[in-house]
Length: 94
Image (cartoon, one colour):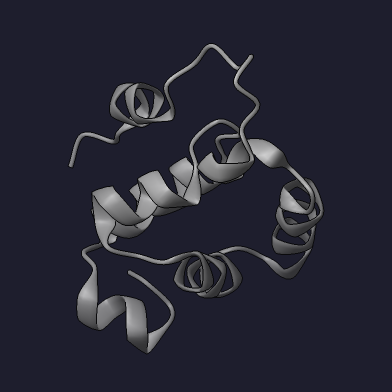
């Protein structure tokens, strides 16, 4: 069961789980998370803060800080992956 009131009102537990899974995946962009779930980057941060332990949240934030693969517009043209396909493959069965 989601801890935060916001996530419990708008997302199912399976959706929250999918957001967390996609957020941890390095190559799934915040734009893809928004397309799949309707959750913006600030919303993802709120969910991660509410659902993870404080230590795990700090590790995730440190990992995401400066990671160009989390934003499509920062991708290098040399990157040969499609973040939408990765998100489809990793989508939880809910």
